[in-house]
Amino acid sequence: MGRYTNTDLLMAIGAVMLQVLVLRRLLDLPTRLPRWNRWLGWLWVPALAAFTLAAALHYKTPSLADAYLLFGSGVMAAALLRLRDYRPARTMLVGLAPMLLRRLLTVALAVLGWQLWPIPASLVKLWGKVDGYWFFAMLFVAISQKKELVKQTAQREKEEASRQRVAAQNAELERLVAERTALLTQQAEELQTALNELRTTQAQLIQSEKMASLGELTAGIAHEIQNPLNFVNNFADVSAELVAELAEEQTRPAPDAGLEEELLTDLRQNLLKISQHGQRASSIVRGMLEHSRASTGERQPTDLNALADEYLRLSYHGLRAKDKSFNATLQTDFAAILPLVPAVAGDLGRVLLNLFTNAFYAVQKRQQTGELGYVPTVRVSTCRAGDAVEVRVRDNGTGIPEAVRQKIFQPFFTTKPSGEGTGLGLSLAHDIVVQGHGGTLSVSSQEGEFTEFVVRIPF
Image (cartoon, rainbow, N blue to C red):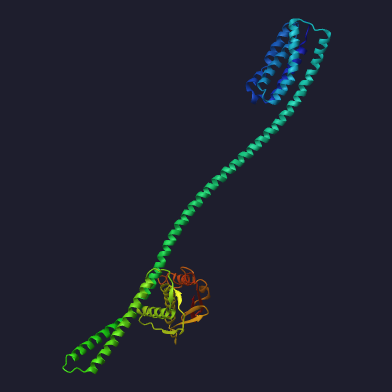
C-alpha cells in the first residue's frame, strides 16, 4: 500500500464528471435514458463519500481514486449498454472499455496486494497513457457518427414531412375532386332536369304555336267553307224545285219532252255543282285536319300553287273575321307550269300560313298609322328556280329593321306586343323548310317600305 493525496482523488472525480458530461451531451441521455441520466448525475455522492473517507484515514488506504474511477466507468458502461442499439453509444462503449479494464485490473491488484513483474507493470503503465487518447479518439468518431445520424434523421424527417405534405395535398386533392365530382353530378342532374323541363316546355310551346296558327285558320275556314256550303244549299233547293217541276210535267196527259230534257239537264248541272262545292268543303276540312294533326313526316308530291292560294285566302279571311274594317289587295302570280315538289303539305302549310299572317299583320299596322294614299297589298308569287321551286311572299307593310332581321329566326324572338306572339312562328318555319325539306328561307326588307320572304324547296 502506498500513500495517496487528495489531488489524485480530485482528478479522478473530475475525470469521471467530465466523461459523464460528455456522454450526457453526446448521447442525449436526458431524452434517451432519463433514469440513468439521473443516476449519472448523482455520481458526486459516492465521490464525496470517497473524499471524506480518504481524508479521515489520512490517505493511508488503497487507491480510492482508482476505485472511484472504476465505479464511475462501470456506471457509464452500464448506461452505454442500455443504448447499444445507438451507434455513437456503441462507439463510446468501445472507447471506454480499455479504460474500464485497466482500472479494474489496477483495483484488483491493489486489493489483492499483488505486484506485477517489471515488464507487465511497464505495459500497464503504457496502457494507462494510451487509453485516454483512445477514449477521445472514439469520442470524435462518435461525434461524427452522431452528426451523420442527425443529418440522416433530418433528411428522413424532411422526407417524412414531404411525404406527409404530399399525402395531405393528395388528400386535399381527393377531397376537392370528390367535392367537384359531387358538384358536377349535382349540376348534371340539375341540367338534366332543366333539359327535361325545357323539352316539355318546348313541346308545349310548339303545340301552343300550332294551336295559335290553327286559331288563325278557324275564322278563315268558317268564312271560306261557308261559300261552298251556301252553293250546296242553293243548288240543292233549286234541284228540289226542278225535280218537283219534272214530276208535275210527267203527270200531265201530254208531257213536253223538250221541257223534260231541259229540266233534266239543269238538274244534272246542279248536281255537278253540288258535288264540286261539296268536294271544295271537304278539301277545306281535310286541310284543317292536316294542319292540326301531328306530322307523319311522309313527303308527297305537292302543288305549291294550290297550297299557297288556299292558305292565302284562309289567312286573309281569318284576319277579316277579327277586324271587319280591314281590307287588303291580294296579288297572285303563280307560275303556269310548276313541278310538284316532295313535301309534307301540312308542315309547308304552317310555314305559308305564318308568312301570310305576318304579312297581313304588317300591312294592318301600317294602315292603322293613317298614312294617306296607302293601300295594303300582299303579293304571292311562285316560280321555278333551277332544281327548286320558290314561293315569294311580299307585303308593303312596316318593314323590318336591320337589327331585327338578324334575330328574326331565333326562337322566342318577336316584335309583337306581349300576348300577340310566342316568337316561335318564324323559328319553326325556318326549321321546317331547312331541316325538314332541305330548302332555304330568307328575308329581305326595307323599313317602312316592304318585306319579302322567299321559301325555296328543292324537287
